[in-house]
Image (cartoon, rainbow, N blue to C red; front, side, top):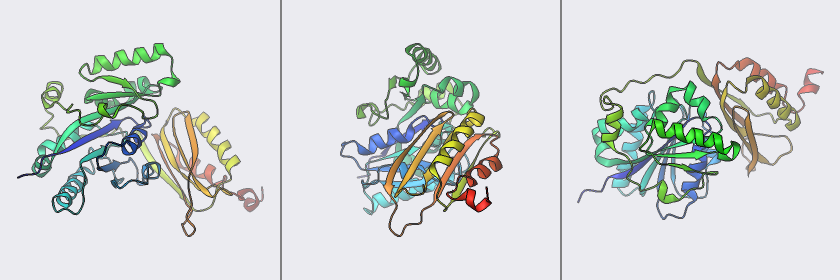
Length: 333
């Protein structure tokens, strides 16, 4: 007998909306399913794997050399094919796939893959497209970015995050707009990814006819381009940072470039701290937390990803260089 098609959840949402937090929630839930995770990040360095839970046996595949909806779509086809082959041969057991797209992905070309690629279509079926919407920044993002609009329009479920950061009136205004944009998708609030697992897995929410109604060329038009104003760059360095200097620099950075900083995240090597520090932010919202210990023989390295609109990379790099522990003594300041 032929194996049943593998259910796939496409997890989308604009930069910093809370997709990885929700994915952690899914991985930690005692649902009894083994999940293969495909991650895509906008930029050449992946950070989310540091944030995801590490004590489970899920297969996590990173794609960080381009956007899943265009330049690395061929990689997605290849990865899905490899996973299906390993499962069929009994070399890897999993029950479902979750694809976490980059925050700048249009979900349409990702979903198209499961219909226009014959081998993928035979092995997989889309269970649902889940879109996480950041209540604090969504209205601004929907006005400024076509991708944010597409993510809402293609959603089978809309999960509203960060409602604790806005008033009830603002939340109601946003929900009304989301329902106008996509009346078929239920809108539910999530707090740090907490939501009923029955609302996100095995919901059979994807409706091809509904998609064709809003985008008749869905199965024919595979073109997609990003806004050239949005770019990313990565900072890497092995020298430890002086925490007070780094905090001061980031405060200045956010005051100056907060509106242009769409998303920033990274792993920090802080002088005197035996643990790596995970930081992430969206515009002016910023957080940092201690994470797992650095290994005894592990190379301690800071890696930061900045995504934004026309960000002046030299200014960022020069400022970070001044935050290295002992930098003032080295420069004679």
